[in-house]
Amino acid sequence: MESCSDDDIENDLEDLYGVRDGTIFVIDATPSMFKNDPDNPYFLQCIKQYKEILKQKLVWDRQDWIGLVLFGTEIWDKDPETKHILTLQKLGLPSIESMKEVMKIDEGNKWKYYRDIASSTAYPLYDVLWHAAQAFSAIRVTMPMRRVIIFTSCDNPPCDDNEKHRIRVQATSYSDIDLQLLVVGLGENWNHDLFYKDLEMQFGKIDADDYNRISLKDIVEQVKLPSRNMAKLPLRLGENVVIDVSLRSLSVKTSYLKKENISKESNIPLSSHTYHIVDENDDIEEVENEESQQASLPILDIDIQKYQTFGDERINFTPEEVRCLCTTREIGIDIIYIKHISYHPLYHVETPYFVIPGKSYRKDNKLLFGALLNKCEAKNLMIICAVTIRKNFGTSLYTMIPNVKSGGFYLYKIPFKENVQNMSEYFPEYIFDDNENKPPIVPNGVELLEQIIKKLSIEYNPKLFSNPEVQDQHQIIEALALDLEKPEPLPDDTLPNTDKMYKLVNDLLDEYDKVFMKKTDDISDDPPETKHKKSNKVMKPSDFSENKIQEYLRTGQIATFTVSQLKHMLETLGLKLSGKKDELINRIEKHFE
Image: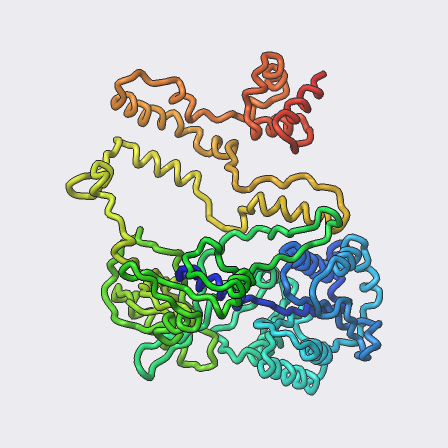
């Protein structure tokens, strides 16, 4: 038997909510896609983005389906025959072969071949929309998200009104078969209002106020990264008032590549399976020999019972009973009451969610959600609610904090009393407030630190900081799969740029030492150690000049520098930066031999 917990239930249901997306990239191959830049035309830019997405799918071993289709070519598919439409990669799982084919188009300059077969008379937009819909209809795989993305530099299709009407009708039918249509316009002078804005609005059945044009970078991020939408839930204000909302996660746990078990003899990947057996040391009654032999056999999941201890007694539950215990409310958000905002900013039991209006076809859905959000923001109110995210998950109490700027509510889980620790009983000397126990403030120290923080602050964007471990894994997998040489390690974006920081706050460091080092001397009974004076010392770029490096090498100080400082020296000398510390030092020594 096993002990029952919320973590067990969450792990059991983890595989039931997997996501498999399907995306067909439709690229315009008419002459206008090759005229903007002879070396890097729009067509090649789209191929590069497709290659980047394909690489990410392969590295992460995602089961997403992907395909590539060109339209407006003089050569077309023969089976089935659709004029001026050429399928480069059929809709299917990504593979190494498909990656190599795309690399030939990009790096092998095969894109020039498609430039030569571009048609100056045909623009079969209706046919390619029908062709993409047929590609999805031919497969029998469940996909929560199915996209058709069109890349074009022609903002107004060169066809008559009857053909444009057929295109609009075909785009409208996409919503009936649960296909998402997205159009990416290329070029600074691309006018979305001429044709494609109405096309996307008719497909999505959205208002003009809610429409936003999607750029090439935005669409790539949508396809590369998994969706952060956790669930689509009903927000119940009463018995008959329901708002469709979406629950979105604000952060994602860093995912590393999964380890694969392989055979030592043949290097063939092995699949692992788990099963349950009765523990020989378990406290069970003695049975006959035949039953004891059966006990050593694997046990089915339906025969496993979980227990909780009440009053020193084990209360057993079958899997069906466990699921019934979790189902106390219907899925959704039930408002309990509304009160003035009063919460402790440190009471974060778990990462908060964000509630936004769902993509509902009802016009009053977003209107009612916006009215509720604006009223709560104006009157400084928060909502206490009961949230049930999944069918077999328990119900928890949450606080909805309005944020009009972001267009939704922050959803914080309310902790139980035993989850909150009162640290003031154990560390009263470190608990400060604005009345009785004010924090010790150094004169002029606050203003000085504010100036330093202001100069060193940057606008945070998670795209600027890549995980170095994940990057190394991607490089190794890519090199092994494509038979490439091991590339140079990428620079670590998470490390601070000390040289740049020194230049920004160099004029404030002397004042910092005067204010805070003097305060430290007054508090400490011992004489200040020399390390206090070195605490703010940052190596200047002039310290890594060629003459200085040669002097460090002659005096033996070269071994006292860190790996980061040694790499700065190698960069000054124009040498290779990769390797361990001993290798870096040996490289510098050989340079001056």
